[in-house]
Image 1: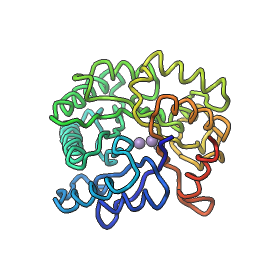
Image 2: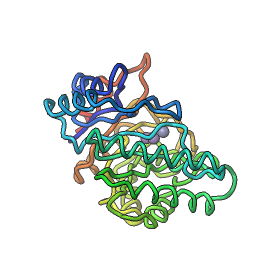
Image 3: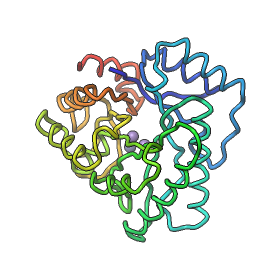
Image 4: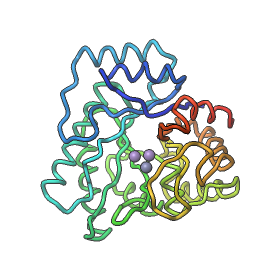
Length: 279
Ligand code: MN
Ligand code: MN
Ligand code: ZN
């Protein structure tokens, strides 16, 4: 099993590897820069070398790490300047991942802001395809959404419809978030439910396109569309269901990343320990 969590790059980007090792991760996720702004400081050559060096010296497989897009881009937006900025950010992140040797970049699919799914998807496909022209080995992973109002890509068929329009195919893959799937109405609470949900995912998206799993319990009820992650086993999905998900994706050798909260109840160290105890 390759398992870890989202780790901070605070200080410098190579610190993320220290944070991952400290947490006993065999997989991890980062933001390559401050996720809350449009502008990114350029990567410094020394930081890139330190990041790669530390990774090399760790037991973590390079293919088990990923980066997540910053928060502001919206690839489905009808706003012209916003769309352009979003696509440029995506391209810049694909390039940054290339420099760092990170194989996967997870992106949200955005919001059509009330202009309708069809129009939103058209723009999204255009934006993703443009970024797909970037010449390196980084794959852009489409993350299933929680199904919030105006959002795109909560439902597996729609995710497949988007994915199947993207070219070149080798530049793209999918990231499955358990919290998002559950609050979008896909049951993951029992062995049987997990089997059914993943067979539905396989039938539409194709399990071979799954490159990263975000393992999060859900604060909300099934189908509530509320994007609130919770500690493993303490939310509405529960230990049993998440255990079955882990088993399913381990068969496919998909790295597992936790995006669980850090609060008085638990921290990353403990959530990771608990996941390891489930197998
Ligand atoms: Mn995400
Ligand atoms: Mn996620
Ligand atoms: Zn989420």
